Image (cartoon, rainbow, N blue to C red; front, side, top):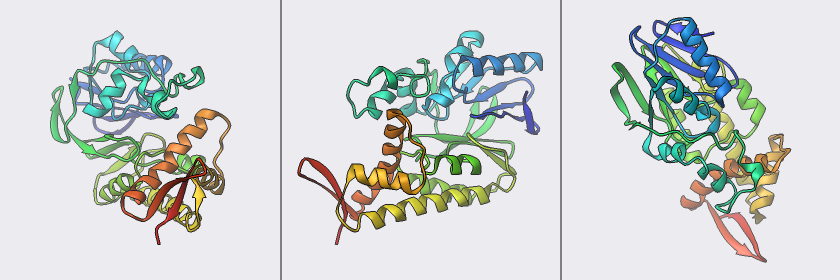
Length: 295
């Protein structure tokens, strides 16, 4: 069932939130859930409540947010909108398990629905700013960091933040949030702190009117992870040992190789900008990649 947040603003809450905005004549979904089961639930509820659907916005190309997209398109012929870079992965989802396995052919255990959803054709690329999308006036915000060109959507005073930040429970559950660029993530969070929407809902977590407090908690967690990493790198440490120790520090649950790859990416997201800013250096010795603070 849809939960109404405000006039024309709805959400189907779950492990992954799915947004829906409408003016009564035109309806737009914001993300599509993990799989066809999630998509079928959305479509069934829309039909039961007599709500229209003309378009689907895919905020970023992670399978838990787009895995149901193809089912929605096949059953409704809704047009799909996504940022141009994210669209490449939506149309070629094999790219995600490929890059998570270091660019080599990934084993079958990486080609699962949590990492590789069904390919879906993107009809139009999204551009940031105020826009008319299928007849609805909304705003597309650039919110990179969790994904390279992720966007968030604002409509009628409500921010659909996607994974620009995480709800408090999700933040604690994962310990080290999944991101691809810590510098961009923090810039996005600082930008969102300056916004004044009537409320916001992340991709994972509840709608909040006082959303700035949760965003501040996200910022604090990123600063804690970065500080822990810098302390560990005061002395030379291998890249893999750094990843392992950071994950251990934040009590990350890691039970499968795919978990390891995801958290390795998340920790790498802090290392990369620190290397570019001259704070850390990478070097190879004894056939291992090492990390160390620059003197």
